[in-house]
Amino acid sequence: MLQYQDTPLIELQDDIIRAAGIRLLIKREDQNHPSVSGNKWWKLKYNLDEAIRSGHHTLLTFGGAYSNHIYAVAAAAHELGLKSIGIIRGEENLPRNHTLAFARDHGMILQYISRELYRQKNDDAFITKLHDQFGGFYLLPEGGTNDLALKGCSEFATQIKAQSEFDYLCLPVGTGGTMAGMIAGLKGGHNIIGFSVLKNGTYLQEEVSGLLKNFSPPAYANWQIEMEYHFGGYAKKTRALDDFISFMWGKHHLPLEPVYTGKMMFGVYDMMLKGRFNASSTVMILHTGGLQGQTSLSE
Ligand SMILES: *Cc1c(COP(=O)(O)O)cnc(C)c1O
Image (cartoon, rainbow, N blue to C red):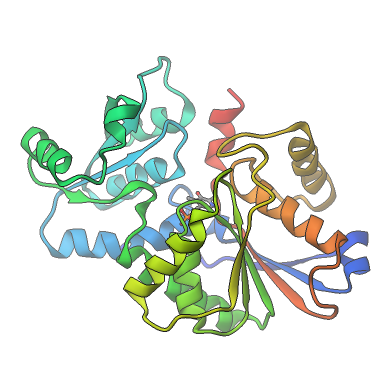
């Protein structure tokens, strides 16, 4: 099994939080592992168990050039003595950015494919071709989202619940796998607020419902996805977002990045300013990690 480091729960205090009349807690899950950090650790946990149990020696997965998932899979495979293959969207660019250089240094074979071909990543015929090329492998979908990922995230939800009481749980949403797992793990309790990092994220509502239906049948209604904090779309950012991230670092020494956690946290602060959290409630923020991406994006 992967190493795991227990992570702290910290409380932030500033004028905006005081004015909102709430408690703001942050679960620093970004610190759970040096390179398989945050939600990616939990999404991989049971997939890695299953890959090994079923006798696989190789992991294969998909991602973009800055993908935290690619980075995490390369590190996890390296730690467990597995081989890894990353099918990367788009053309090869040299020198490699931090994410892909790290993946390569941890033994990942990188294969670049066109954006067109990349769209076939879930098609059986395409996967068969990859098997013809690479032989046997354990397949992890893009972003690592599958039932075993939900199982890991739901276990994480149980762990947080045991650590503290809270009313709201806030987290960023990419594929929706982490959010679906958290909803399942909280079993209808609490109010779960996801922040879409995608511009056209309305389909995520259905996506999360669908993932949940597969994994854990009760149809919970205690969750919503905020669509107003994508800052132009996936991996897009603005001056206001950068300024906010700098502010949070200066004020609270809280490291955030612009792809996921910065957008969520901006959303949380905006919602506090708009009085959208019930007074006297406790808001739990999930720091899902992803800080490695910062290095690549600033290159
Ligand atoms: C991958 C990732 C997410 C998104 O998780 P999903 O399960 O795809 O919704 C959120 N935050 C960080 C830091 C990530 O790396």
